[in-house]
Length: 377
Ligand code: PEP
Ligand code: MN
Image (tube, rainbow, N blue to C red):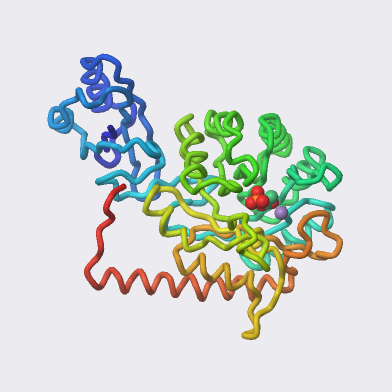
């Protein structure tokens, strides 16, 4: 059961205390207070866990400060959009807002190779007014003989350059708990010039111990990629692991599904699931067209498949794009064939903007006609 409190209620104030005292009357019920500060209001919710069927919903709904009582289904207790929960839950990080309305483009290197390449990418991002990027330091690779990423070694210059070029958030994959410690300590040593969104790769979507660790820290938001060869429900449970451990700054990323049915693309593009995720959960949704398509073929209309796939996700309401760029893809140590050139960035951004505007127009059109209400799961 979730109690949605009135806007701007103090999470440590008397109303919350009264709710907690009330709950003590019911044996076996644990209460957890979650508060998310948004741009327009602070959303505070009290989660009641245990045999909540014993609780009289009307009694608790009558307590001061309680706006609504929501009975949650078993699935996705924290990240889910339960009956009556219309608000998406987003978060602020390093001056940027992430929710089901926001739109950010995280462009950059799949894997950091040289300081020069990091700098070239960041310089171009800044020139285009972007303050978010992707930089892979730890690379989980299928073959043990492939480049595994520079790891901790590259973090000092990646963070220093991010500070110099106004990058506020870097999406960076980790595969082990101590990678988070490396990131934290290197950020501190550099004077926290930027922020990091910790990425959980498709291969780690069921690394439950890693997910719990990422949930126990609240400093870094977490970008969870759809798992490989598992169901959508299993992938969303990866997010639930992070959120239920205490970190609700979670973004879900569609990156295609592994099957030969997607050929010639690297994976079968699954961006039709953007609205599905938004309906099932309250998380922002990211798309990764680079790892979905995996190659730079151009269709007869002159547009690359990667741009077409991006447009399919953005027109469906994606809130974030994770996309590979490289100044010299032939020199890339990982995923060169799918990396866009820095010269292609302007067109990519313009094209994404056209599609985002089209999505906004479609939303406005729906608002003018009878607005369909979201029925809960
Ligand atoms: C990546 O984004 O660098 C990556 C390895 O992606 P995925 O985990 O989706 O394969
Ligand atoms: Mn990659």
